[in-house]
Image (cartoon, rainbow, N blue to C red; front, side, top):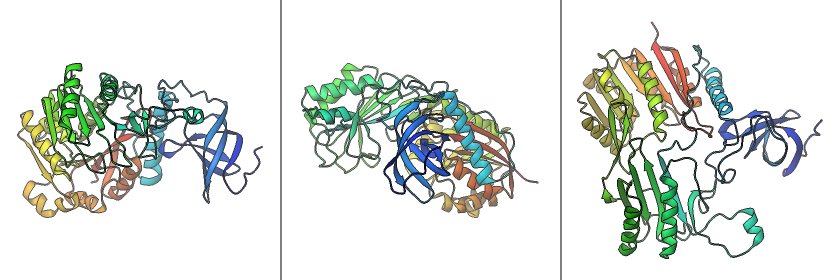
Length: 472
């Protein structure tokens, strides 16, 4: 029997069993009635020594320091950077087990938080490809490469340049990535080639602490149509160096169909408020979904898993049960992907979104696809959804809502209740806030279908789609 732990961390619990997954990619163990949340490379079923680093009133937090008996659900993580890079925390867990836990996350949230009557939850839709599924990645260049423990102990001179991802909880340190398993080719080849070119030419990598350097970041988009977009951020208006980088990429990678760059001299890497200059090719790429084409620019939002985005939208369309005569409202429409995806099955679709640039993209996507029965409006959702708006644009028979992780504001829920559509379809990336909102809707709407969808294998994130019908 494990002896009770001392009161003050840090301390080590020896040979304890990891019991289950927990929130945010962690696992948990119960020791003498106390819950210990375990971060890092842990899996349910492990027998391990756990170093407890923090302790709160009702729980502790720690990490595995020695593994005595590996869990039967463990698999070999293919990525050499696994355990240091924070991007794919569950690569060491069998994918079927990941899916089972994500389905449980959805069920637990709806049962415990929503506390509403539920139909049988449909089996989770797993990703057809659990690796190389992302269509967009952003890499940072840094003069402050993250050093491994071995390198620190060695103490020798090291090349501190890096092209990769931020180490978790460290804005100033970048893990140099040799091969990322998230995005298909030519993503890795482009990043490595640009890194090599920059070092050969003596171009300095960016220092995020002192805000010095030239080469800042690299964004790569790879579309399902085969088109490729590359956006390079530089921090200094050195036109000779910019020309060299752009011409190198254009010559070395003729498959790049949209080559662009940004001069960013701000304190952060966001460029939504900056000019993006197209060097070669088109200023956008196109994603395909059934007969539709969606233009994706350097500032556009598009679901980062193209294959699962299609499955997600098919579920939303099925739950909407359109017959062709409905007025549909699509809330939080973004660049109008769901709105345009449903438009041919509806009489008219009205999309609402906070971000004006996204609404401009949504209108372009309707135009490109020859859709004339869509309208898009930008503004604060709470202020848009008024009785006057419904009077001017019509009261919808169906509402699709796909809010951010925080869910819907109470005022938006009240506006939905006032609109009283026959059917609601709630798409969510956070089952907990979705469940909270379902509880608010329960007096007027009954849940008729629930479909979890895994958009992000090897992470704890899960999407969920719920269909609701107005009660008689």
